[in-house]
Every structure is written in C-alpha cells, then in structure tokens.
Length: 314
Image (cartoon, rainbow, N blue to C red; front, side, top):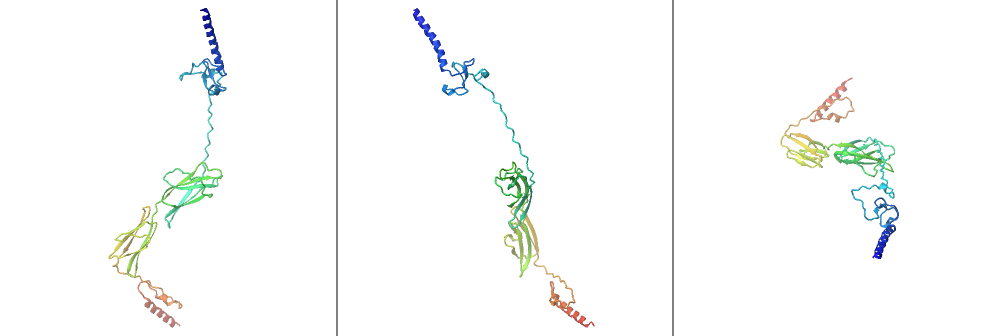
C-alpha cells in the first residue's frame, strides 16, 4: 500500500516537472508580463503568430474589450504612439492682372456678331487658351488644355445675341497658370434693317423694299407676307392708301416703315428756270433743260433776242 502511494507521489512530481519542461520547449524567446503574456518579436511565423501580436503562454488569459492594459510594463514591447506631423500648406499663387477688354460689331451680311478680346501679356507666359461661352453665369470657365494663340488678342466670330463669358488661360511650354480669367459681355438682340419706297413704271405701281437680318417681311392692306429675297411687289390701290411694312428678325426684333399712295391725285410739276448766260460757246441744249413742263421754246426765243441785242451794240 505504501509502495503504491509512493509511486503515485512520484508520478505527480514527474507530471509537475514535465509541465514546466513543455512550456520552456514550446515557448519562444522573451519574458512575459504579470499575466504570463508578451508580444512576439522574433520568428513569429514559426510560432503561428504575427509580428507584434500580444499573446499569453498559459492559455488562460485574454484581454477584455473594456479592460485597460498598460503596455509600458511589457518590456519586450517597445511601443510609442505615432506623432502626426501635418504637411505644410501649399501656397496659393497670386492671380495675374490680365485686364481683359472686349468690344463687338454686327456683320450685316450674315447677321452675326464678332467679339474682339485683348489682354495684357504676363511675364513667363507665351501662349493662351481662350473661349467664348454663352452663359448667364459670372464664374470663369476653363477654356481647355490646348493653346489657341500666342498673341494677346482673339476674335470670336459667328455669335448670336446673348450673355457671354470671354475666358483666357495663360501658360507656357511647362505649365498653365493656376487661374483662368474672364470678362462678361452682353450682345443685344439683332434688329432688322428695312428700306422701302413706292415707284411707278409704265402705268404700274410697285413697292420696292430691301432688308438685312430679317426672317420675315409683312405688308398690310391685303398684301401679306412677302419674300425676303425679292425686292419688289406690285400694288393696285383704288384710293388713297397707307401701307405699313414690318420686318422681323430671328431675335423677334422688328423694324417698320409706312408708305402712302393716292392714285387719284393730280400730278404737280415744279418748274425751275435756268439762268441766261452770254457765253457764245454755251451749248444750246443746256438752255433747253426743264423740270416738269417743257419751256425750251421760251428760252430759245429769249436767247435769240439777247444775241440780236448784243449785235446792235457799237
């Protein structure tokens, strides 16, 4: 009975020492803290751990989510909180002074506007990207990455009426300026040009008209819309009539003119007598000039009388 007790005691002692032996064999280098834990620093993959992983060797302790642990007591874990050093702010460049100036004119042949823009030439820049954008906004718009000119002026052609932003971006072979610049310009609605008159040829009466920048032309008193290409239309009024001619542009602007004709009116003539001259080389035909009624015979007799009178002088 005693022998069996002694054997049992020996087994307990051996088991106790063997448990310490296994820990030393399975444990990797490094001292542990008060919890029997530490952070892996050497050959961590060989132990199935990650570098910097905090673990325990007795397998019975783990950190709770709400438990604070003072890592400063872990002699194997050399930890220092990262220090955030913000990068210095990028300095904002100073805008250039381009002083963009603009003006416009209307091309009456095709009824479109041309905007002419010019600006100062900044130092270090020798090329410019430009654009004309029809918008009500006041915010400058990037004209794009491609240079349009090396000059400090540009003409924008074929524009309709409205509000425009003229945008300019200076650059050189290495870069574009930080900013782009603009000027605002308003192009007024296009008003048509209208000219009309009444003429009579071979007993027929006509309204002659011409226009520019008109999309339509209307004549009242039964005439109606007429072609903007033709410049004459026959009329046959029976009494005194006033015709109103109205031309309308694509912008809705109008121009009007009125013409009055009275087919029953008696024609009137204006007679303008010509002065008598004593120059004998004067062409007789010039003395027969008249306006309205012919009075050539009267002037011829008077001229002959003057010649006879001069001839009697000593």
